[in-house]
Image 1: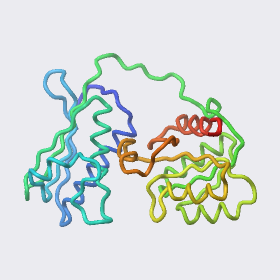
Image 2: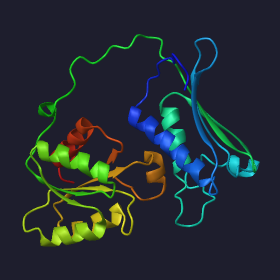
Image 3: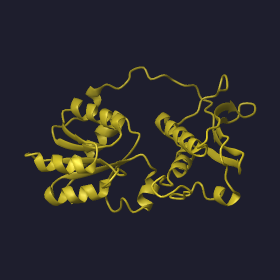
Length: 262
């Protein structure tokens, strides 16, 4: 890692997601093992900040490399990849004002280079962090469906602290059973879009048949455009992008619950 790097302006969670996606791809390209290298540097005198992820894996042909950032393009076997990983990385870097390029040679490996603009203005630390008392509150019952344990834990903490009554499930089947056994109302379904088995969209349709007054808020870690493009989400639906902050989650939940009925 480079010393005395310049500052960039970006969402830490999104940059972390971009790095993880690149690292997972590098791992998959080295099934027999290899070397993964992550480097940072400043390009030129006061130029951009560079982040490179390099593997010594199988590499790509020029034809494959030309399509790698397209949503749903994948060379992996069915069920092994969504084709959204690099599309997500591309979207995050573009949103951060940067560029991403790829150099690859069959049998020699691949290097992804991310270039992000430096911020020349000084950085002012935030004096007081937000506290839960600052977040919107409520008393409604929320059915939370999320297969990622870390995200589930964070969302549960936020909902509980803010006064909601959360019911939680790790997948759609468990959520359907919870809804059937719950005697009271469920005011909001907060569900991941892409899950093993039944996805969030079909889950919402099945639950709404029995609970027509229930509101629905979808979550996804994929780029908004990719999710909409896939047809998983369409129409006037509420969407929360992951990773989210406690404030972002609390505001969106309150916004959906307070919206006027169609």
